[in-house]
Each structure stands twice: as structure tokens, then as C-alpha cells.
Amino acid sequence: MLIKEESDISFKKISTKKNILIIQDIDGVCIPLVKDPLLRKIDPNYIESIAKLDDEFAVLTCGEHEGERGVNRIIERALNSNNKIKEQGLYLPGLAACGVEYQDKHGNMELLGLSIEENKFLSEAPKYMKKLLEKELVNSIPFKDKEQANYEIKKAICDTRFSPAINLNSLFNIFENDLKSKIKLQEIMLRVMSEIIEIAYTKGFTDSFYLHISPNLGIKNGNEIIKFATKEDIGTTDIQLIIKGALKECGLLVLLNKYIKNKFGYYPFGHNFSIRNAPKGIDGLISLCKKKIRPEIMPILIGVGDTITSNKDILENKWLRGGSDRGFLTLIQELGKAYKKENIIIFVDSSFGEVYRPSTKDQTLTGITDPYDILKLNVIMNNGPKEYIKWVNKFCNNRYNMRKK
Image 1 (cartoon, rainbow, N blue to C red):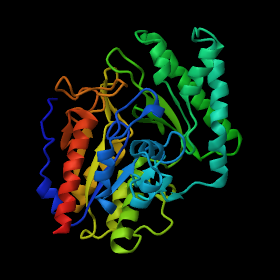
Image 2: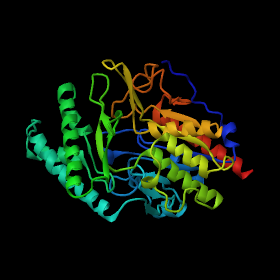
Image 3: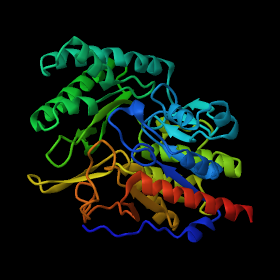
Image 4: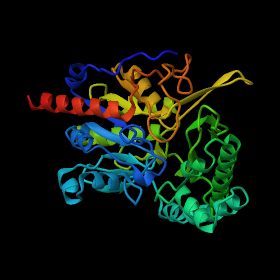
């Protein structure tokens, strides 16, 4: 499948529309992917540009806003200020932790659909993860000494507040050209995180959590499918413990609920709507929208993501399609059809960072999509976050100036 050069979106065409909403992933889109999440950086110009969109922009991410690893800390470092950001509304508004952590542009936080008991278990999970991972790795990796082992395990455990995870990027470096060992690490990570689910079961959380595998090969029997490393693709780099129901496509409706309240003064799905009471599946989500949102107030949606996958299963002769952004991008596309809106899907090539991903550099979309994929990419940012940020800066200024007239 050859890439079509379409990154020059008509600014006038979109900017003149009355109601629009950009819904955007973060890592790999506006922040280049790095092996150590604590070293992520964001362009200050991008932050200033996004603020001009006011209620017409929201993030939708499996990362988090707050905490040591949160995006808010990256923004504060980029602008070297805390008070200015809060006062001027320069935080990225939207939904994090795949759907439970909502904040506005001033950093005012709201937890949606998360019980006190579930929150407590999530805070305890990293301790279990560390103990289990330590036990697995001692017999698998020839660390130089205990100090190196502790350092690597600490880096691998992401003790985020609502989506604790194991990330293998640093451990992969130890086996740079050893494919078998990389696959073994992925097997260990899956084993450890599966044990975390078992621990949750024993504590009474039989329907509270699931494992979000990134990137993945879709879903089988209700579970996301791990993508093992190959010579061409590093495959799955991290697995998160996520609240059940916290899917980005469900989060999209939470954002629409907030958008319509801010713009038109009421919640179409109700004040207490969250990912926990959203319908399951694209058809159910579209049906709810059609019942509750009138066509004249449904905005044109611009969805932006970088993590979609498509790989051919030769043995079963079928395509395995996944990726954490696939669900919400597909929903945006299908809502466009249902409402006869010119919704736009933007794909950002995130292979320019430190984490190897399937790339558009060879002018194909192998490993990303396929000729039979129902998800169609309207715009492809071949040059990654750099190209996307350049587009955002231009678009936001154009939209801001149009509104002032």
C-alpha cells in the first residue's frame, strides 16, 4: 500500500466550520517516543498554540496527567513555570489513563468511574509487579551486579497512579541484537502482568481490571493479543493494568459529553456519564450518540493517533488489527458517516523517536494498515511529531484568527 501525500490539510475548509473538536493521542504524536518516559519533552510553541483552541481540543491518552510521570510535569518543565500554566490554562485538557482521569486546561482534576477500593489496589499493584518481575529476571538476565538489576527493574516499573505498567524499552537495550531474548522479556512481562490480574481476582476484583498491551494485534477471547518482536518490528513494549471499560473509544463519548456541556450547556449522556457506563462496541456507541446528540450540535471530529497495527496471520489467512488508537479513530470515522460529517483521521508516524515502530519511510504502510482495513487514514504525517506540530501551530493560529473576525 503506497502512501498518499495528504498532510497539507485545507486550513480554510476546516477553520470556517462552526463546531469542531480535535481529539489527540499524546506520546508519539506531539511528544517523540523515548526509551525513558521521564525524559520526554514537548515543544512550548505547541502548548501555546493548543491553548488558542479553547474547548475545541482534547487529549485522549493511556498515559496520565498528574504524578511524576504525568504529562503535566513535562509541560511545567517546558515552560519553566507552574503558576503561569494554571492561570493561563496551558495544561492539555482531556482524558488520561484511557478514560478515568479528566482535567481541564487549568489542571483541575476529576476522577470518573473509579471506586476507592479500585484506586487503592492500583496504588498497591507496583509493589506486586516489582516483586514478581525481580523473581523472573534474576534467572533470565545476566546483570553485572545487583545494582544494575535494581536500576533496570526500577526503570521498567511505571508506578503511575491509575494505570501502573511494565515498560521494556530500557531492558531491550541489554539485548540490542538478540531477538530471542527480547521475545523472552515480552513473555516474562505478560506472565507478570497476568499474575497481577490473578492477585486482583483473589482480592475480590473479578471484573475491575484488564491488561492493555501496547502495541497489540487486536483482541481474542476478550484479551488483547501481544505482539512479539521480529527483526523488523520491536512489537509490544509495555503492558498496563487498566480499569475495565477504559477503552479510548468509550473515552471519546466522555469527551463529547464534556464538549457539548461546555458549548451548549447540557450533558447529552448525563452528568455522571463515564467509561464504566458506556456501551460496549462501536455500534453501541454510535447508537447512543444518535439517540442523544442532534446532528446540528455534533462537531466535526479530527482524530489524531500513531498506534495502529495490522499484520497478516499466514497460518489462519487473516489480518490481525490492533493498536491503542485504532478504536477511537475508527469510531470517529464511523460517526462521520452516521452524521454525514467530514470527520478527519490523521496518522502520525512515530517511528522517528527512540522506540522502533513500523514506519512510513519506505513509502508503504506495512505493519500499520492493509488494503482491507475498514479504518482509512485521511492524512499521513510522514515526518512524525515534528510535522504534526508544524501543522498544529498553523491550524490553531488560523482558527483563532477566523474566530476573532
